[in-house]
Image (cartoon, rainbow, N blue to C red; front, top):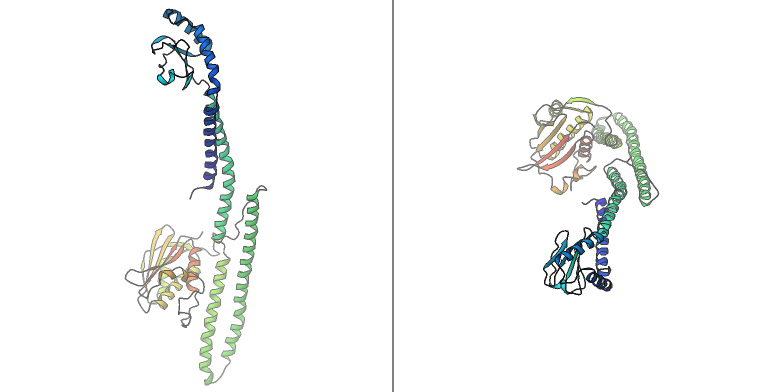
Length: 418
């Protein structure tokens, strides 16, 4: 995409070029080289015919007169006969006129004039940069304006670029992004509008996060009271009821825990350091979590700086997701080293796979594939959302891909804590 400042600057330069061309065309169309100067040059030709020696005079006399005229006028001069032959010249010999030039009162060559004399002879006059100096003056003026226009256009568009960068930052999740307001023009007003909108969005999101965290905390208390009440139920007839309600309470408790974790991760601004940081043996952590799930673990040892609790939750969620949706197939977990402090986790299964249209949507909170919401599998649709959040807070990313031969592969890149 072309930069705005280049477009604006190119427009200014194009205007200058068009202006210069129009001036040149106007000069050629209406300047002194046209009909209004013909009478003047006829008079000049008549005077020159009287000043110069007659046609039959010796060449020495013609040469002396031509040298005197050249010194007085500051021109290179060449005098030629009616048939184009050289009579005399002062300075470099100038080219003979062609048939068209001989039929005119005066012809303007580049930096030269061809002046036919009444007696049939022709005087060719030349001077460097004659009256073409105005062209160079206009070109220099245009160049100066172009040079001055560049910092002006760059200053305007640089402010727009800074505004665009802050818009991108806001869109990527940095709710504290603001634009410095400078001046009192339209761009300054746009910056003020952006800052007001960003502040309102930040306040709305903060309120939403606060309400979510408060609701999650409030749910814990009644759940605890219900659990105590169930335990107090006596008799054999209450055993089945207690088991069923206890299972439901356990699921609600897990949901509240995931909501609290999601809320805490959302409250962390992008780029902000995690609360707990330590060096972690990632392969060892994966092996510990996979030991009770039957998943195979392979790879190389990688030391990573991060939050151990969050990374353990990430690995656990990946394994649990593969167990639920792998249709009982073997789960393979590999750890690969990408560089110092960087690693890639791969969890593979041979389940039915994830349609391409849903490979990004499954990372959205509470998202369930079609038909999955009716099944009681203990999932709330937050597991993969937490995986992506934890990965991003460790400088990485999570993605879903199709596995060659059938199945699904989840890849998680971890690049160290910001």
